[in-house]
Amino acid sequence: MSHPRRSLVTGANRGLGLEFAQQLLERGDHVVATCRQPGRASALNGLVGEYPGRLHMLPLNIADPRSIAELARELPLVCDGLDLLVNNAGVLHSGERFGSVPPANLDDSFRTNASGPLLLTQALAPVLAEGARVVNLSSSWGSVSELEAFRTPSYAISKAAQNMVTALLAKALGERGIVVLAMNPGWVQTDMGGAHAELTPSESVAGMLKVIETAGADDSGRFLDWRGRPAPW
Ligand code: NDP
Image (cartoon, rainbow, N blue to C red):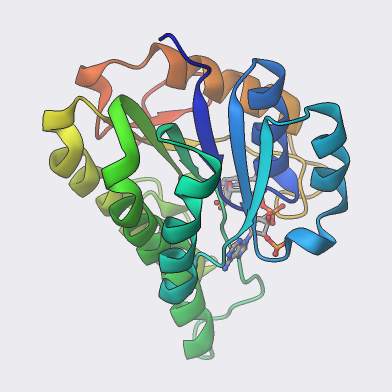
């Protein structure tokens, strides 16, 4: 590749998204870091000075189709194509019990975790370079075959739906050589994963970037964990 790689990350203001932005900048990429409120993303704003001209921040609420359309309009102003799209933004509504699952949680999770990645990838498909990578951050809790208990249904259902999004996008984009992956990041120390999780964001993202880097056309549409091992659907 003759130009620096161009990457876009959603939910880049904290957690795994922030770590993706940081490690992509460290490896020399041009990074478009999106989040709901760039003005309040203090850690990201701190990185702008460290990587002059290589980090662009744009607003994106992945659950809002108008925000996705606005991002697609603004993106060409900061970047002339994309080699990597990381659909990282996600929401987990905890504390749900059978008998009282709030419909609003189901709606919000579906929009954020499933339809958001589909609509964003669809909107950005024209600017994805041949051979680009699209990565959807999935979860073992979205795995039907590994289900252990009635746990966080809004999250589990939306991540299972997102897995179908990955499989569909692999079909839609395969003829352009674009590789689409579902990735389980492991259990990671973020606001979502909690302080007692097994992995640091740094370990998880470094592992995922290695897997993304080495994935080939045959891997498109697969569900892999942060070490590259197959994850069960
Ligand atoms: P965090 O809760 O720490 O961060 C979530 C990120 O998503 C924040 O940047 C948040 O932005 C953003 N976000 C949520 N809703 C929206 C929205 N509507 N529009 C734009 N951004 C939004 O989560 P993690 O960093 O831990 O998780 C990242 C991804 O990895 C998620 O998809 C998650 O499901 C997945 N994952 C994480 C695991 C873990 O152990 N941590 C395990 C398995 C999967 P804001 O600050 O505005 O809320």
